[in-house]
Length: 358
Image 1 (cartoon, helix red, strand yellow):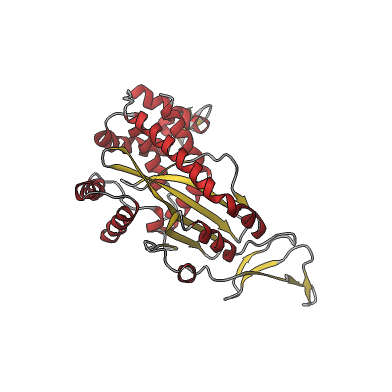
Image 2 (cartoon, helix red, strand yellow):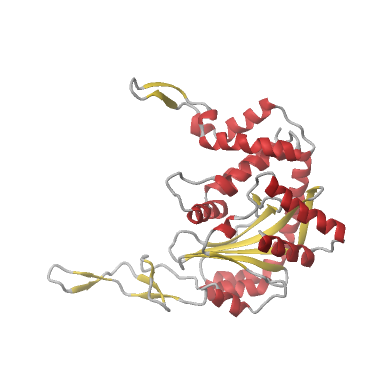
């Protein structure tokens, strides 16, 4: 907890000029979050494969890369199988991708597969360091990578003592699970909720080193454009703060958000007789937890559309996870992946749209 607040303190002091009273209010706000029962940490903090980076002084990128296990190459190797007589036969249409430092197998793609090296991503990061500060790096078994950067001088308050920051996230993989791409998010610093993904005028997807090099020159303008989108998104949340809602509107948002999960479905009420009834949105695990979240949110922010949006987001950022997965580090990794490039990102975006429509 103390390490997180110290990191939070460094980020604030180096991204915006705050007087001592403002700074004290923001630190107290973090402690208030903990007292109210909020999980005062991000998935990156919990997942053991993530490391927070103190990049206040734009440290040596080579050292950062090495310390996070990103200084290897994913190299191609022929693939063989054992024949009926014990002879080795080469696979003609697939190849192995291995870590050149420890020979661990990373992928078995088709021969046409092009490997995007981490050195190319390092070059990409070096080109945008004048605008950003590295916050954390998540290395998932040398196969998937999430690099979190905070866009410098981009912290804005939605309401008093409720700062949000703009983040640039680079995702890539060696196991074909996700294409290398850049996304922009903003995070509520009070409880580390990842809010909506900022919509891009053009997709930022890189399939090979050349595509990265071709796009480096326009990254500055892309970041500037997203700063404007960030400000617009902050204004959206400010409108939500002023929008008081009734219980019927909470019901409307949750029903519409999860419509496909309950509409037209049945739920068993007696396993012996196999009797059923129509399923309701209230039967969903997500909704049961979100309704508990809303009690805290309404206490903190009043009965507003903003509180509703945060109650939903909190579930996907801190609570979602299959009951059969007991290891919290694994649960945090799954949430992190789903939030950055999986289905959760779309649900979070949709929840904002619904809350804005109230």
